[in-house]
Amino acid sequence: MSDQAVPKRSAPGSSGQPEGIRLQKVLAKAGIASRRVAEELIELGRVQVDGEVVREQGRRIDPDTAVVHVDGVRVVLKEDVVTLAFNKPHGVLSTMHDDAHRPCVGDYLHNRKERLFHVGRLDADTEGLLLLTNDGDLAHRLMHPSYEISKTYLAEVPGPIPKDLGKRLRAGVELEDGPIAVDSFKLISSMPGKALVEVVLHEGRKHIVRRLLDHVGHPVEHLVRTAVGEVRLGNQRPGSMRVLNRQEVGALYKAVGL
Image (cartoon, rainbow, N blue to C red; front, side, top):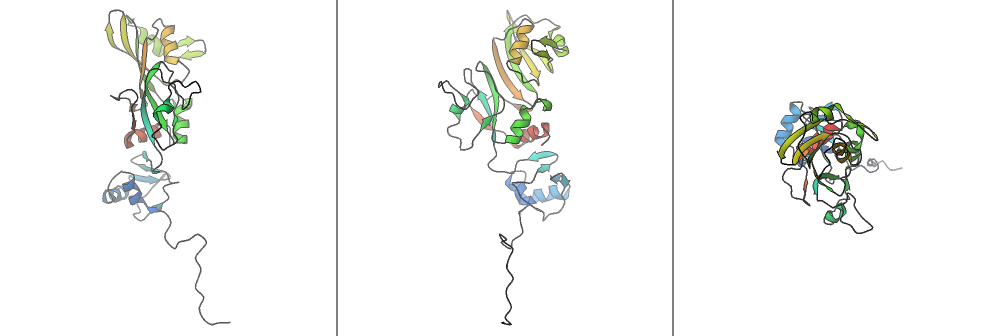
């Protein structure tokens, strides 16, 4: 037997390098701040990893599994995760494919490399904000009724609008499939024979805004969804889409407890 020392073998799969990526580097790559500013955020206790405040500058994390919050707002770390705001035009179906070759959301996604799906639906005659994402957890919670995510609509209806209609809708009315109450109702503008109203509710039942306003004698003539939670349609043109900014994504995560 040789007296020559036998070199120690590394553990299987080990490169000899510390596992993970430095937290400040991860934050900088996610667009939160420069590395130096990220280090200051960590030092001030404004960063949490998996529910714990981290003040350790050398902390390494796995961006694929770690849950990071800065000032209580979730940070998306995976580069391949995307959430889009799409302004669905009138007549477009909320589906990725239609066997009858009718216009659908999937027609607008041919140039996207991600496999996206829509969060909820808008009927073909309703325009406006539809969220698209490949984040399954976020989509599931946004659609689950227990999280009560608000949706805002602008509806053009026959006028005039009774002064007590908002109070009546906030108190709730009975539809064929159960009661419904709005979170908010506002008269935006009025003209002879027509009115523009804003309706905010967190219900997700099929055609709920149309059925609600029809029930109280003001059938919808034109309907646009303008917001989902804190994400707003703004001045996006029909058929366009944009990537949500960090604040918008963080607000959605916060609303559903992620």
